[in-house]
Structure formats: structure tokens, C-alpha cells
Length: 145
Image (cartoon, rainbow, N blue to C red; front, side, top):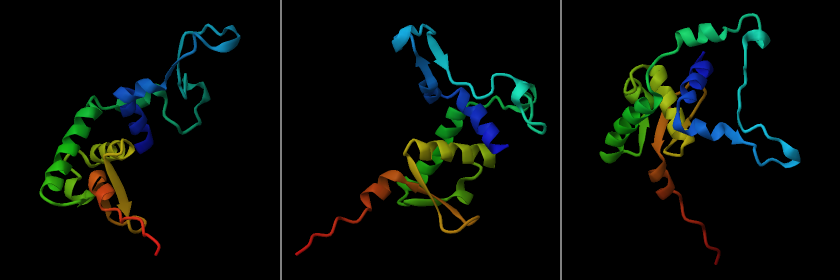
């Protein structure tokens, strides 16, 4: 369910445009124009318990994921500006509206290199780390005598 919601949210995102390909100048005379990658063109290939496109779209939310990402980024920035380099997910879990929307937003932020995610153990606390601070905190390379 989370993966389906993530795919639905990313469809409207600005970086999704990078998944369109212009093949007009392809070798061997391919003149198909702009092609868009589509994993499921229709409902014919779905497994029995997988929802149809209509069912999935009927459950889709209208929220703009970029707005949610901005809200979560602002909340994280307030913690980072207060001197913290790491924030527990539990502290910000509602900053994007719902826990799922906030989680999706931090996944996008992690993918974009804004934050680093760390978890000490499976199902343990999730730390959201400022990527700028973690870059600065890296230990310098040891120099041999």
C-alpha cells in the first residue's frame, strides 16, 4: 500500500519529468517521439488481489506531495537551526499531515540528498539526520607518518 501511494504521489512531482524520453533522434529510424515509461498500461496484467487502476485512483489523495515535503523540510530545519543534527522521526511524524505523508516526504528528502536516514536496529527508532551536518562531521583522513 505504501509503495502504491508513493508511486501515485511521485507521478505529479517535478522530478518525474525525467522519466520521459525523447527518441526522435534514435538510431535506425525510430520516430516514436517522446516516450513515457509506464509499468502498468492497463488492468489486463494485474494479479488477482492487486487493485485495479480505478480502485487505486479512487483511493488517491489530492494533496500535493511537494507541499508536504516543504512542510516537513521546514519542521526539520527548525530543529537543525536550533543546534540539532539528528531528529527522531517520532518527533516530526505529524508535520506532513499524516504519518504516511511525513514518511513519504522524508523518503523524498533522503533521495534528494537533503537528509540521511539511520536506524540502529530493525523496527527501531528512525533518525532523520541533516545531510549538511553529516558531511561536515566526517572525520578527516588519517595521514601516515
